[in-house]
Image (cartoon, rainbow, N blue to C red):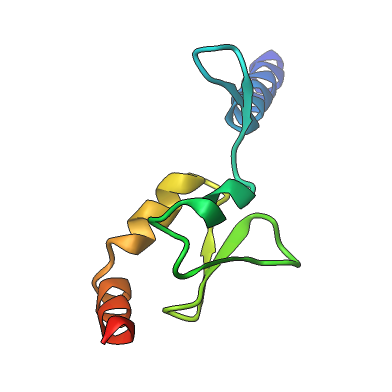
Length: 95
């Protein structure tokens, strides 16, 4: 019985650390929430939209797809940007 409670405490500590990471300057960084600063980033500004009803998602207007940013934040957007489907749709819109 004691092992189970120890595992639960460890799991809670790990889960809590995912949501409240600190950068090297000691500033807390919240993962998993859409950041409005991404809308000004030239890499995303052509297609990125906020999803009003779900702050853990971003919307790609080029692909007409919601992208979860819950697990990786900006890296989730980067993964989407480099998909073949996204790149093809962006090229077609530029023509």
